[in-house]
Length: 169
Image 1 (cartoon, rainbow, N blue to C red):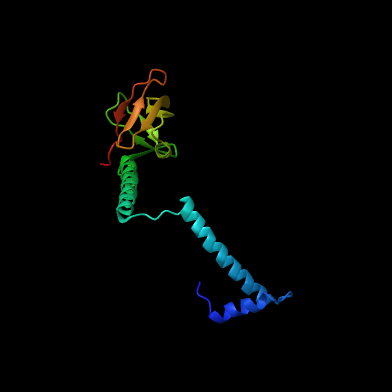
Image 2: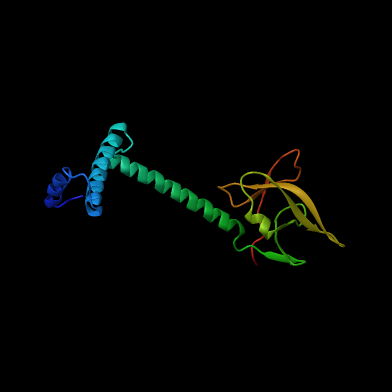
């Protein structure tokens, strides 16, 4: 904060007064604030709150941040691939995806696929019979490294198998 040397002379003149105008008060407050900020920065440097990094440390931090960014980007891409370009079926105003290579033709609601995470969740899978649409409750989860869904038919005796959704034709 570079100041005009004339202002410093004004401050010397102001110290002799007892009553100040608004402009004079502002000059005094600016000067006191400047001194306070200087002392605060010195104290922070001494306390170690402000740390100056070397070029090696800066490059290491940047590489770690870049790795984290790439990891998040990869996870988002895997999540997107999990449900992108998959065949959608419509039954009674709801949309479903169909699993492949299961014992039956099981379907999962589209909105349920968006809420899945690596934590197992109880979800209803649907299957068709001649008369109606029935459901079965299973444990299902996803993993960040896989495009597949992990399904356990029995929520009590947990054993996950991997299944994928049917691709578009």
